Image 1 (tube, helix red, strand yellow):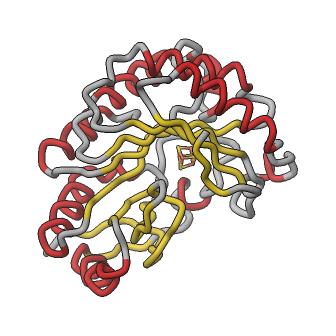
Image 2 (cartoon, protein in one colour):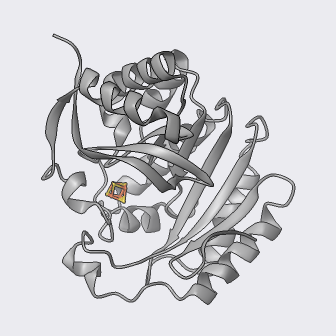
Length: 261
Ligand code: SF4
């Protein structure tokens, strides 16, 4: 029997998953984090899933390939299914010639390394959810008990470093979660990224993102206001100063879309 994957679904052309590119995007089910503000919480908890044969996805990608730049996998946390993910990326690249990409919370560095050792991955998007020097805050932002923070931040650091061999660009992102992540936290994250030795990556972009209480957000954050646009812009400007010469900084809001600072 061929490989199968737990997925929530896919979209033939997405404009928001790979910065400034059109992607065919697949959503993998399940996640090892429990972010209380997650826009895909049902998917992350495995409440939206079906077992799909790799060949079925491949056929859908072949049809859409002439109209997209990238094949992208998001979730959930795609690297939980790392063997099947590596095989899928490899097959898509070999059979369609598309550039391939995945999204990750970077908490399973071994899985990232496994995938990178088997596929020439063109783009990786990593959520850096809080300053890596603040493990307790990191744990709160991802919805885990505070004691888990220390282990998680060390793994995320390794996960980010494992991604620098990407072919096109490494996209790092932070969401300004209301009441949890401040403009100063974004500046702190930027300083930490600057000092991490990521210069080997062909290109790095850092995207500061607005929280929006979409339908899939759990009750706890459903009534939270969206992050004010001005706050997102201010955080991106600070990040841009910290990351000058290392990364191009963007912000993403419902008002402006994705904009370079
Ligand atoms: S890591 Fe991503 S998919 Fe997982 S719970 Fe957090 S926001 Fe949701």
